[in-house]
Amino acid sequence: MRGIRLGPSSAAGKAVSASVAGLRPWAIAGTTTLIAVNLDPMLLELLVCPNDHAALTVNETEQTLDCTGCGYRYPVRDDIPVMLLDEAIKPAGSS
Ligand SMILES: [Zn+2]
Image: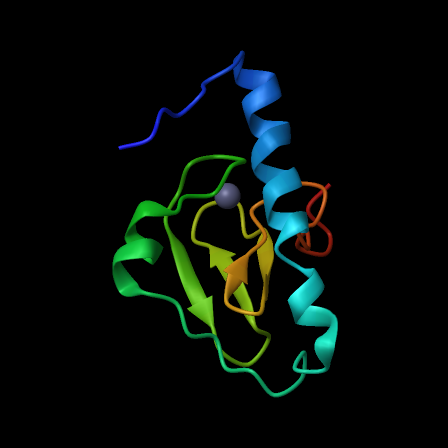
């Protein structure tokens, strides 16, 4: 077990998004199309909506993780769910 640094909660959130962005260079290599959502079911169980902490379901058609609570949809890029509110697709007419 290597040490995991846990900073202030706001900084930790930024660190996670930065690391996800950092994983993307290999994804630019040309394999960004026709990838089925292929997430480990155990990973899916661990993931919750960052907006309301509700469970998520896989939307194979849209390649997103759909929140069962607020309806936000999170894109999955190269099997990496992008669990960022900024990236979420909000349901139309929710305001
Ligand atoms: Zn939600």
